[in-house]
Image 1 (tube, one colour):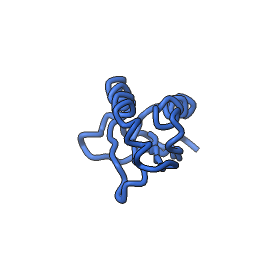
Image 2 (cartoon, helix red, strand yellow; image 1 turned 90 degrees about the vertical axis):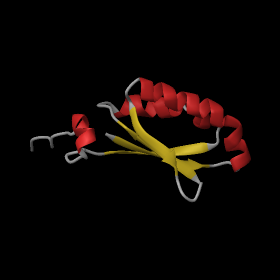
Image 3 (cartoon, one colour; image 1 turned 180 degrees about the vertical axis):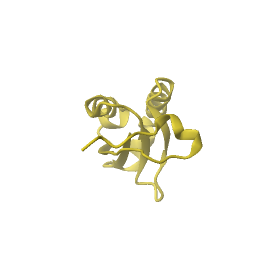
Length: 100
């Protein structure tokens, strides 16, 4: 599982210009089963996306295709973690710790 943290690198006016394309990109990733939660940070200086996947390279490619990235209005920090405990609704995404 991955936490994608977006930080805006441009004024909000530029971010707003790309928002419709960004939302369409989000929708496509939800449809593909990659994203399971997302939203704006408070204060509004970026956003957070919770994603599932086994391959960090795939997640990095998806983030690189975000219209916010292509338009140069945000940077990404991607953190991979092992979701060993979840709410019941997220049980399909639970993971086991690797054997040592």
